[in-house]
Image (cartoon, rainbow, N blue to C red; front, side):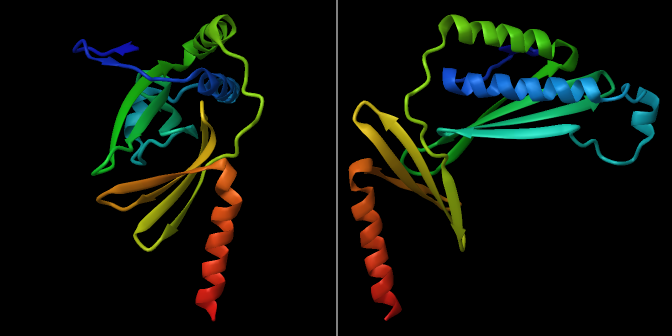
Length: 193
């Protein structure tokens, strides 16, 4: 957690599997930071009319969370801004909530090492089967998300329809994926006639 000047806390929530990937991304940012030249002096930075852009950006999407990582620079120096957004998949409106923390670039190695120690001490073994990445497709003003997950009942696919004003989803168990797909193909072929 990061504590702001007003006493407010900003924190990120990571599952252990996401923490492993986040640690790897931190390594990439550390390498990039090491290759950068010296910081731009504050006088020159303020004189430049161009808006500040990220020196390096990445994002990670897992489950219902997105993590945006931006290596930036301001008058106080370089830092890694990490923003986590969580999509509320409940009934009704799909809302997004977010948290942001900023890590000074000089402390990234120590932060990564501390995270690696937590993973080593408390991490769980990786799942035996790697699940496919989720995907999405956009049609008109709708977006469809296809997310593969697993729980105590087995592997499933959650298909979510998202419009600007709502979200609706169904869960399809792995054992009926082929039948489900075949049914779609059958109706698609019939509609072409």
